Image (cartoon, rainbow, N blue to C red; front, side, top):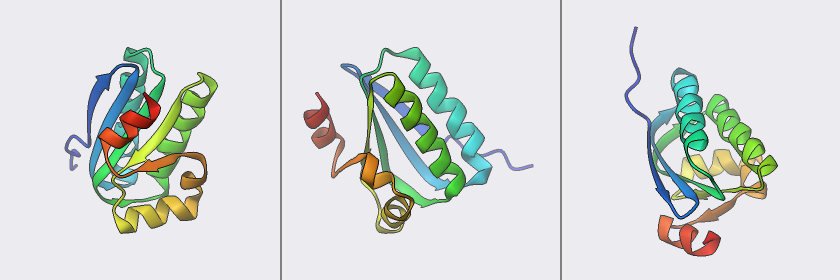
Length: 117
């Protein structure tokens, strides 16, 4: 069985968790992604989550569901979620799924941090 490589790197700054995702986000990595995001969310007192998808080449509905689930959880806690660096094909998936109607999109982590800070 193929073990997926690490698909997430996290950084925490002033109440904001920055999660940098990469590669193909599909059913093979959905459980790993969910577990890693949950671990990071549980580790810090959060006001905001910035998902940097700049190095994501593909995303399917299973990982969209992971992102939406974290959005709902954080919204209940009074925290927000922003998306950064969407590649054209990933942006289209986020747009069609409705994620861009409920999450802000920024061009860079710095812009997102400035807006949510």
